Structures are given as C-alpha cells and as structure tokens.
Length: 240
Image (cartoon, one colour):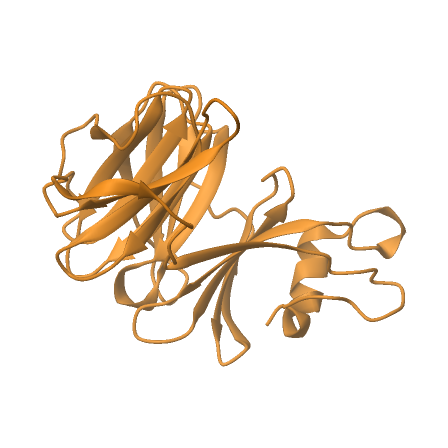
C-alpha cells in the first residue's frame, strides 16, 4: 500500500542526503464506505502524516493532521471518520485532554472536538463503533480512561469519561468491536512476574458484559505496525 505513495512520503519525511529514514510506525483503517486511511509517523510517534487512499490512489493527505489542536499533541491515533473521512485523535499535553480533528472525504476540516479530560496519557487507542460513534481509550500508570464520542459529536460518558478495566498501571490498550451492542477493551497491564493482557467486554453504557480473562489482544478497526521504507537513493523500499 505504501510503496505507491513513496513520492508523497518522501516529500514529507525526506532528510539530508535524499534518504527516507526509518523505522516508521503505521496505522491503517478502512474508511467508512470504502477506501483506506493511513497514519505514518516516526517510531517515536513524531511527525505524523495522514493519507486517504482509494484503490491505492491518493485522495488527500495531511502534513499536519492535528492542525487546529493546541500543541504539543502526543500519541496520535486514527479511526474512520464521518462521510468516508478520517478521524484523528491526540493527547494535548498542556491541557490534559484528548481532542479530535475530523477530516471530511475531500480533505477539508469537518470539526474539532474535545473528547476526554485525562490527567495523564501514555498511550492512546481509538476505534469507530457504528452506529454508536467513536471509542477512545487513554492508558497510563493510573489505568485506562475511556470515552464514547457519539455520532453527533457529544460525549457519551461525561467530560472525564470512565476508568475501565483493571486497576493499576496499564502499558497500552486495544479496542475491539464485536457487534453494534458490545465492544472489548484489551489491556496490557503491569503485573508481578511480567506484563499480562486482560480483556473486558462492555456494552454502550460501559457496563461489563463478560468477566475479564487473560487472552491475546483482539482485532481492532485500527491496525498498527512498524515498517522500514528503505532508502530513497537506491534499492527497493520495503513496505506493506
């Protein structure tokens, strides 16, 4: 998918000597109604770049996908947006909140929304849950704080969201969509003897549907990988 967009990526990430340094972190989602959404950033999550693709062809790109959100913005995550657009979420460090920037299918800004008040956020996960809206989860040493952003762009669980899942430090979380009425939160949590993964199943009111059990991370509407795109001065770049 990324190989066909190397010229676009080079324009954004090109460094001294004409090379495209790596590795890169890549997030991929399927846009509502068809097409792909891709977020490419450096391995430390810096310099995020968003592309909307249709059958491998570029529809639009955003060199500043969190434009309109007060910087600095960390842990940028994407999900399918309204009307085949892309929803971009990020943690605003100075304001201690998660904000969203909605990009329409023509690349124009659709909305900017305060999603969740969170004192701290070390990792951010987001997923689209039709027809309910977007699920967002902030993980930290204090656990995981989650929010449901409804389709009408209002908060489903209050300004501060809800603390869900296991208590104590959480390294990261992944949101899985099971059905229009249920979703899962899989947490990689710190524990004696090493990290463990616990998966909780919830309904739209964030009520527990099933008790947690150690198991692999569930599939998510947003896939995350790390890739090497290779050099831009010669050789064959490697990409999905």
